[in-house]
Length: 488
Image 1: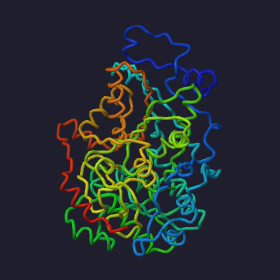
Image 2: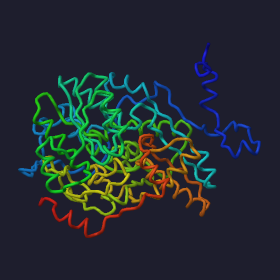
Image 3: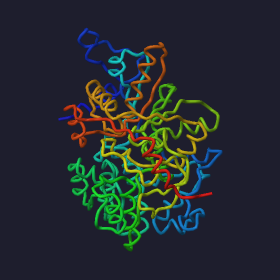
Image 4: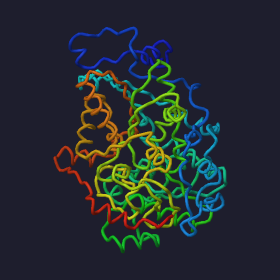
């Protein structure tokens, strides 16, 4: 029997129809507007990006280089090659090439789940009673449940092409570890994951997905590495951090022949791969002549935010258009809004290069809350430079307000969002409510980085009224920043 979705005419109707919210249906309003913007804007397969966009090529002030922690001199390709794959090192250091071709093998993999839809949040708009138009780019329509697969397959591909045996990595909430495990299974690579201990304990099912794909998963900090032992001695009973897990993963990579370390955020190469999000978003908006007023993304290390804003930021850097770009971070780990712009270690164990970024200090231990993958002490060097130069703004939001927004979104839009994504949802709702007060018809675009179906412990605590808001004191942050490396 032919499926309705396989019929071109039905498929077009399904894709181009205006979505009707429950209130409309209850009032008997079932007429479709011929000129209305579709509920979901899809790109055709041939419209997928064939090249990644490198924002750094259009930046007048380039991000500061990574420094060797021993010599305090810029890291060379040869030095970075001992930790990262050769092709990824080239991408990491390339500040001048605007577009880098996506290999055909990676594009073919992308076709499993890309292009991803740009969705008009009609029901959320109706719920808020706002004149604002709200769109979200949904990146959760793949097995990993998040945008992380965009870079995971690229990094695994270059490792395989180099003839490596496997890769090591860290993961916070588990999305990156899941995505990398999936990519490595697809390409036949070994995958060793160090998972932040608090997430390892809160998200056993996310851990088991990784193991199902063949990855080994170790809670971090652990007794399996020298740096893990040192961290445990200094912070007994700690729930860990991304900085801790990075240190362990790097140690394992450099001490095992045939392995390299890969990272799911922060680095230039990762923002490059994630530019497919923004390129697709802009192409979908352009298809209907939609120009956003503001673009909002959650920010932990910067992969989702950097990918989402990339082509819009490019226009802004070139002076072609202007957009309000907002980074949203957890109040419990506020690197942009309360951190210092300085050189710092990328990891807690101080074995990685130094990066100039907005940081809370590599020794900062975030509270074991449910901000998930946003618990990194620093921010991407590229985004940090853009923020310092005034091209974007940042806001921090409390945990309970984030989950209030997540709950509202789930009830009216039908998707249970990841806690990370819900930071962007919170500010999108806040901005839409401002439009309600002022009567402005602004167009808001935000990134829905993934789904929250493995985050039910967090939702349970919120529903039970057991969730609180932890905000670090000025004294805590100052104590951590006091240990920043001395770099002239």
